[in-house]
Length: 256
Ligand code: 13P
Figure 1: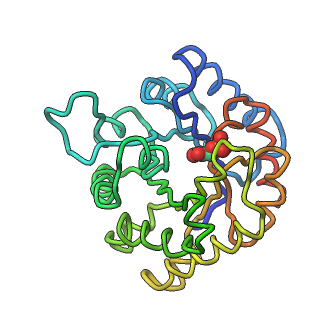
Figure 2: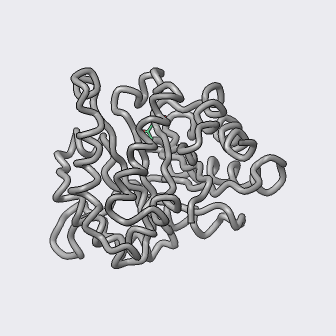
């Protein structure tokens, strides 16, 4: 089912204690403050926080995601974390294909397809990221790039598998730059993504797919972005690191 989702991606931020405190604050906001009705909230924490945060949170609309998983099932892969290990912490989702992993860890669409398989085998929901770099947008190739990332990374799964997938459109030029996509640019790409999902899985599945926007999303611009019909929510980096800012974005999603 298509949902209103606001997900935080903490990236490589927060020590153990700091992360538990941030998760506690988000949980308290959702518990005691008005304004988050109808929004599903996900915390994409570092691996070290997953088990404790999953254990501590109390709110039915709050759950935890890992930021990556291995494409391997298990074994001699020093430093890697498997999807089975993530699921065993109580985390419900995993972010796959973030542009920082593609850029700094050489993750290819083929590798990501393997990660998607491991996540589904372990019953994890997937937030699958796609997005073009600036040069690709300037060359007018952004639709083609995003379609290919989806086709090669995630469209191999069955319709049942795809129902566990949320797509996050994250234009790389907008991540951490303060230069957000305009609501029109986001809407245009989200509508395009929905059309390629429809080609692959049919109109009903496409209408049910949740598509998030990520890239310098903040309390100041979230409302405008979420007002667009194909922007179902956000994947939030920097602004998810302060509970008050994150909650403002959640409220902006609830209002629309
Ligand atoms: P920022 O919100 O910091 O631009 O990061 C977006 C992002 O990469 C979320 O995954």
